[in-house]
Length: 282
Picture 1 (cartoon, rainbow, N blue to C red):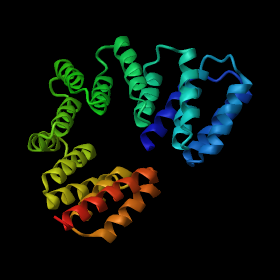
Picture 2: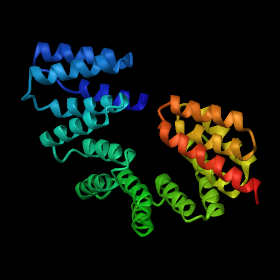
Picture 3: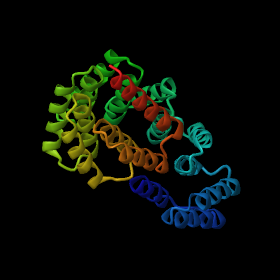
């Protein structure tokens, strides 16, 4: 969140604002963003947009508004803001990437792929877009298309961290967990602070039944970032597998507190309980 916050502030400070009222409202939104007062930031950006509806830099304001609304959980509003921004600057790589990422996060996978494909058509050397589109293809169970994107990424940049992470995800998806562990380990040799690699390797260890190693990687990941609800979901699964049910339920609750869907958390817990009952009567 902090990285995106910096992008919001720096992007807008790089422009000369032509209206005093517009300038005041944007400056006020900066203060709100720094205080993580998203409602205040949203209100001031909307006022700025209304004060100068024809201002060319409204594209950036709308993009930032979309990101703020995303933080607030206003998914539909965020998509509208990104879409309105693209109506002003349809070839904006940054805004396309923002909307594609949001589409992917809400499982609108075809729309996410469409945005990433437009992005790649604008610049086929956009490494992040190839990586992200490959991951979306994996979500769609299209392993051939995913592999194609990761292979193209390797061609563009043979030392790409994202390409290796992509292939690790592909191996994990195809149940080649030992191979995915090896790839994640290579990534971690290059950067021992890589949160995603620890998370991915922990997940692979979990599927291999190597719970102690999974817990160690979860612990290392939490030292880097303890605000990811998916990490608590993973730890809850590991704890449940080690008969630490109270701790597992606490982690499910923590994940929901951090923004994970309560319905999805309950479904995962229900499945774990059902599996435990099956094992008990075998």
